[in-house]
Image 1 (tube, rainbow, N blue to C red):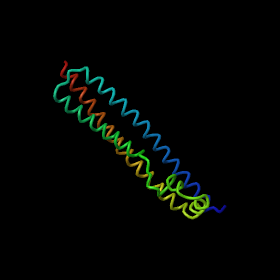
Image 2 (cartoon, helix red, strand yellow):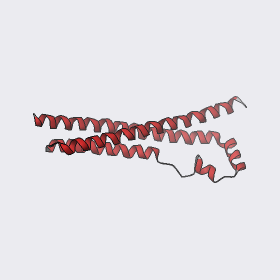
Image 3 (cartoon, rainbow, N blue to C red):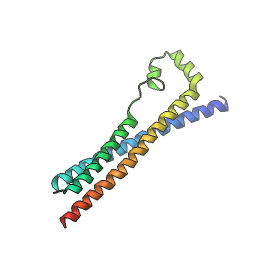
Length: 148
């Protein structure tokens, strides 16, 4: 095996590992957002909220729901057949061997684009989670200030 082939195999494994890490982070953030939404609902249901707290809290909830949507988009299966399992499922054993031998660099490029798209969704979701959390904290402070 040549050095170029070894480098291609290493690059392929690295990109696949990055996709797996991004998916793991996404799963943890989805669980976190779900817990925050459930907690906010539980707290808000039992408190007498004023109009500003309703508005700010509602915006915070909307941002968290938007973040959950981005996270779900990030892990949505891509069944277009260009890369990975859907493509392999349509090929014979010989065609798979030929495709891997011929198109490793193409596969790395496609998987890299997929990884960047997932990472971008994850990054935007984190920004929305931070903003939504800040608004929920502000709504809590507004409610606490009104209660004093």
